[in-house]
Amino acid sequence: MSQIIWDGLFVGSFYALIALGYSMVYGIIKLLNFAHGDLYMLGAFIGFAVLASFGGLATSLGLFALIIVMMLSMVITGTVGVVIERLAYRPLRGAPRLAVLITAVGASFTLEYGIAAIAGPNPRGFPIRLTGDVFLVLGARVTLPQIVLMIIAGLLMIALDTYIRRTSTGRAMRAISLDMKGALLMGVNVNAVISRTFFIGSALAGAAGVMAGAYYGKIDFLMGFIIGLKAFTAAVIGGIGNIRGAMLGGLVLGLIEAFGSELVGGQWRDAFAFAVLILFLTLRPTGILGERVTERV
Image (cartoon, rainbow, N blue to C red):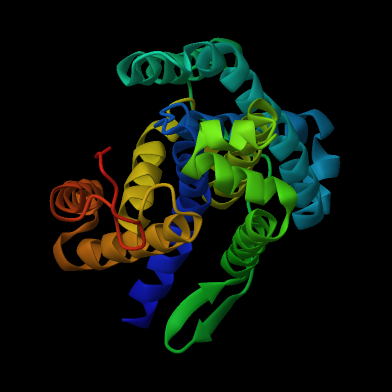
């Protein structure tokens, strides 16, 4: 039991990091950014490119090099997210919702096959593979890399929550999510705040991509598709548009998958996730922490 819970929480922390971007973007401009999972993939490939360019030097530095590369990947991935928002989404801000959704799907394909064209379609081995000692904690086998990655994910989530609740930009984000026109009339620079939201959400996805590459040891240009859908599921479970709900949804989804895999087999892991998505959209579309709204996703 302890092992299942630990495995679920570990995987759920990745889902939560990516779900934050989904929830932030939806909360502020009501857009389901289907390109978000591919920013996770892009972050992993940026990490791969930087580490590969330094060769054995980066490998010898291990975790320290990984953290530096992760920060660099966050900056680049965040910038790409801002560019996507500026070029693809902002011109359609007043367009029907369906047009923006189709544009998001187009942006997703552009990222996927752009990376495939540059890096090739075959999977790549990540230059750094985190390995370490194994500990027994309450009966669960816990590895040192898992502890480190969960601490990093937790710190990023706490920093984001603090930023949104304690800073003027965070207050502007919350104001825009409630009433964009009202915030504009109150002097909020809406475009700048939306760009900052895309930057932060995309940077978190990029960090998750580097962490996943270092942990699993393999990356490919389609790695963002399934995990993007899982992150969307996590955001719906927690209450899409709610930051703390996205964190909770990611952990809940990880636990559901872990227990489901234990009961009926790992090959049904994805089926469990999407069954839960359908269940929530049918019975509780506002999620666990989401507030009641007048229109559904």
